[in-house]
Length: 79
Image (tube, rainbow, N blue to C red; front, side):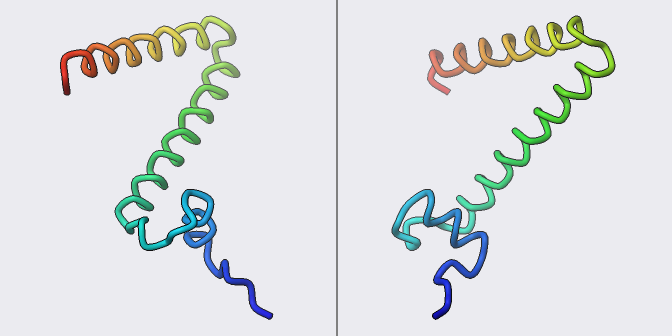
């Protein structure tokens, strides 16, 4: 009896949707980039907090607020 989920890609694809044909390699790459970016941001936030403490975390939160505001403005403008 072999496991039908032989690779990590199959496992991620089955977690996202049960139909593997609906997922393309480009979508898998995009998802991997997004997950890697989130992991990088978490590591960056931990490092900033360790180095500068709460003021560093506050600066990171302010930067994140600016990014979210820019995304909302772009969405409202139709981009």
